[in-house]
Image (cartoon, rainbow, N blue to C red; front, side):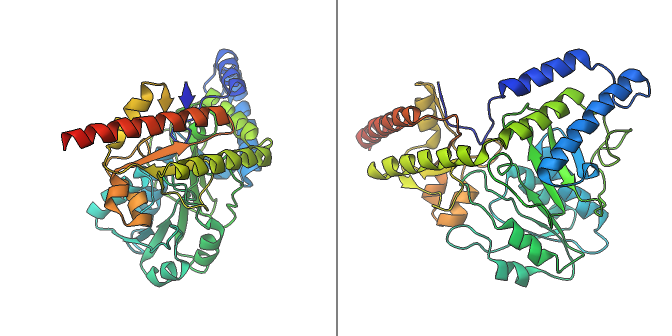
Length: 377
C-alpha cells in the first residue's frame, strides 16, 4: 500500500496507541468523580494538559478538549459570535477555509451575520492592507486558517494577529490543524486556535480549542462538569493522554522531518512537471501538501484507478461538500483546474520509491483515460 493522504488523517503512532490502551485498561475512573479513581484520572489529564500547554506555549486553563477540529471550529466561531452579537455581526474570513469553518459561517448568515472575504495575492496569501480596509466598527471575528488543507498555502498568522491586536474588540481565530506537528506556530496574539490529534499521528475523536483566558464564549455544548465550563461532557482520559504523547512525539526531530519532506516534495514536483502535470500549490506552500490538476479527466476516476493499485490520494479535503475546490479556484481563477484537482499529501514516512511508483501509475492512468475519452469523442 502507498498512502499519500496524510492531510486527511495520519496513521496512529504505535507509542501513542500503546499509551491509549494502557490508560484505558488502568485508569477506569470518571475524572469528574470525587473518589480515588476519579482523582487519579483527573491527575493524569492535568499532567497531559500541562504537557500540551508547554508545547504550544499557552496556559493549561486555555485548553478546551473537543472531539476534533470540526467541533473546535464550531465552538470558536459560534461561541464568539453568539456571545458578542450585541457589538456587531460582521465576520471576516477567506475563500480558503475548511468546510467546518464555512458551514458555521453559513449558519450564522441565516442568523443575520454578514461574512466578508479578504483578498488574496497570486500565491493565496492574505492581503493585509485589504484586511485592514475591511475592518469595521461592527467586526467581531476574523477567522483564517494557518495552512490551507487542499493547496497547502501558509498564511502569515503572526502578522495577521499583530494587525488585529490594534482592534481589541475583534477576536482572531485560526484553524491550526494542518500546522501542528509540521511547523512551529506562534499563538501569542491568537485568541482562539483549533486542532485535531488525527493530523499528527494521534487517535481519532480527540482535538482541542485554545481559548485565551481573557476570551469569553457561549458554549456549544451545555450540561455538566468537565475540564472547563466551556465544553461539558465526561473528559476522555485515554484520548487526552494519548494526544499529549502524540504532540510531543510530533515535535521530536521536527527540523529533520521537515527537511526530508521538503526534499521529496521537490522530487515529486520535478517529476510531475517533466510529465506536464499542472501543479496548483505554490512553491511557498507547506511541503506536506501538493495539489495538482489533470484536466478533462474526472478526479474521482483517477482516484479509484489508483486505488486499484493500492495507492491512496484525495480529490480535495476529506470533509468538503462541493464538487469543485474553492481553494484551487481562489488562487488560479480557473474553474477547470478547480474541478479536476487532486491532493497528494506527504509525510516523513513517505519514501521516494513510493513516489516513483505513484508517478508511473498516474502517468499510465492519464494516458489510458485520455485515449478512452478521445475514442468516445
